[in-house]
Length: 120
Image (tube, helix red, strand yellow):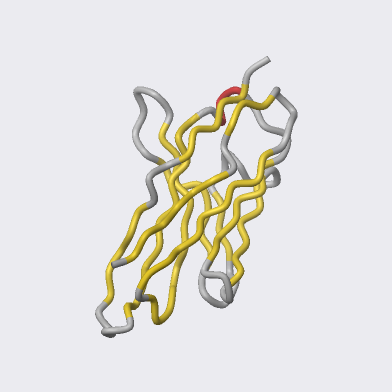
């Protein structure tokens, strides 16, 4: 059993910053790729950023230069630092992870989501 729990969302003014966290817990042997997605009302879920176990990162063009994904492997936690936020960044943000369990089985897990609202 694995849980991903996001935190750090909230209401922020345009130009502001937020740091999202996602902590994985349970019968974890290792975590490979960790990702952040977002879904705005009426839109499809989109991939925001990816980080591998080795620390390689990729970003969506819409957030490049404003967002930084990082992870703490000792804490099984991934972060999303978001700066210069815009109203169009408003969405529910979800973390996602490819996890190898202590049983050595592998699966993909989602968090429950955290709301980010950018508004004045």
